[in-house]
Image (cartoon, rainbow, N blue to C red; front, side, top):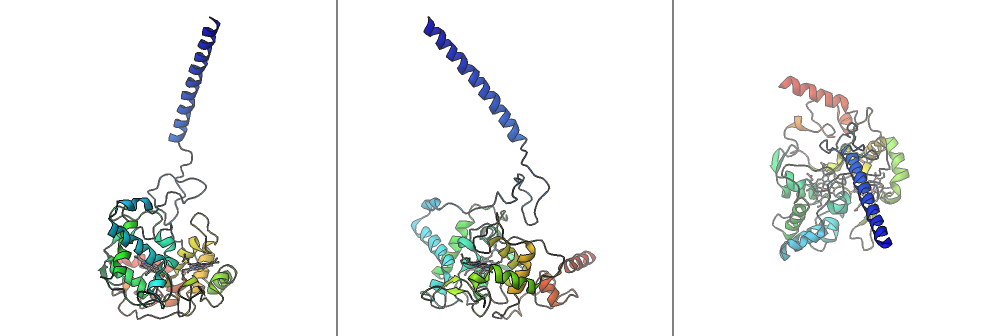
Length: 351
Ligand code: HEC
Ligand code: HEC
């Protein structure tokens, strides 16, 4: 009798416990629906405005990431080989295609990965997430519709100050296979959040190479060296710290020679180890150090066929002629607002 009673008691306790649990879960559900972490106003420029839930502590969650490697088991053996060789070429370009490259000597000793971090997978580390989804596309620099082969070779000829890679070579086919692998889940035409390089807000003043030199001396020189030429690895096949200027660095036709690209890249990726979640430079320091680096000597490039329509030049393209009345120095260093305003006004009066 007694044991029956106590069994009943513990059954009663269980029911009360379950009832309590339901109440707590219900409250939790309401809390999550009315998510107090939702922030509506502090949308950063360059961030994707379609991302609705932005936690208060940082603006940078919800960035696109690379497909997991295990999914490669669904590829054919030959396709998987291409993708893996492509990744290897992006990470260790110089071992294969640099001045002492095992396949062909056709570039300056830098690796694609020096600028496209973690083999082109780092959020806002100049990754390749939007390549498969947006190419072929019209690019105003060439005035033509470009495919990925043209775009990859642009970086070979400019960022790696080298020659074109043959479109039918195993190397080009592998790089394309790897880029397609990275972009496989991105909807056609879409640019996922965190793709490419972050677009920093421009400053009111011109970027200042002298202030930038002080940033460089204190935060960059230890790796990239006082002469900007970096540090070669033992054997001299590739760099431990790549050159940021000098004859072995990117040339004047490269994307990083535009200060907005360099500043955006540096802000969320340098000094090495910096991520989009934890920047170490202020925006001003990033702009100034970019102005300094791009004031130093580097290889030239025949740019006479670039920008057939000069009105399509970006605001910070450092070489004239321009449709607007601003000098090359202002296009290079800013302040950019007067240029942007002029362009906006004249676009309006044209239409
Ligand atoms: C010195 C730095 C640097 C190096 C080295 C470099 N790139 Fe680039 N790459 C850039 C910059 C800057 C951009 C343009 C980013 C932008 O305009 O948003 C770019 C753009 C690209 C794009 C187009 C990305 C897009 O979303 O439209 C591809 C593809 C590419 N690079 C491939 C390569 C390959 C392959 C290599 C190695 C052979 C390489 N890059 C080496 C700096 C570099
Ligand atoms: C701790 C060493 C270290 C420091 C400090 C450092 N970098 Fe780098 N930097 C690197 C390495 C390594 C790479 C290439 C990354 C890779 O290949 O994964 C790189 C790449 C670069 C690149 C692209 C490749 C090139 O050579 O053009 C630029 C630009 C750059 N760094 C600028 C800077 C600036 C500006 C600073 C200071 C704010 C800085 N770095 C501080 C190690 C460093």
